Length: 161
Image 1 (cartoon, rainbow, N blue to C red):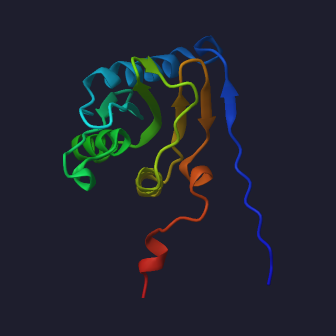
Image 2: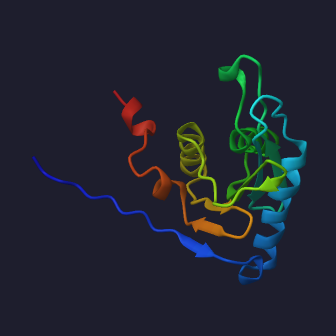
């Protein structure tokens, strides 16, 4: 047996002013998107904003359903919309924010496993890393690419005969 160690690196910021104006805009768009979330059951609203290489920002929100497995996370809503409307344009970054109990959450929210896989697939599709911004009330965690969040991921190589 051999032990394999996987290390993840993230960067934490305590203020938006530490980031570029483009990054600030992306984060603010994810915060604004939260207001449009459909979360009548959990009351846990999530907003995502995707920055495309052409400068366009696409937002998405979580969409709940009474039959819980039928809902969809904000990250996938935003990415699928971006990929369907701009199929030839790479995704540069994604920001994710959550709001519950009438306030933004205290600690940055990481994407679920399914969303991580979709972000990795999008990176693979365009052969470019996607910077991930996880945003809370006062903190911002930045991850350089999705493979950092999902280092052991499923990709097209497993589908080869």
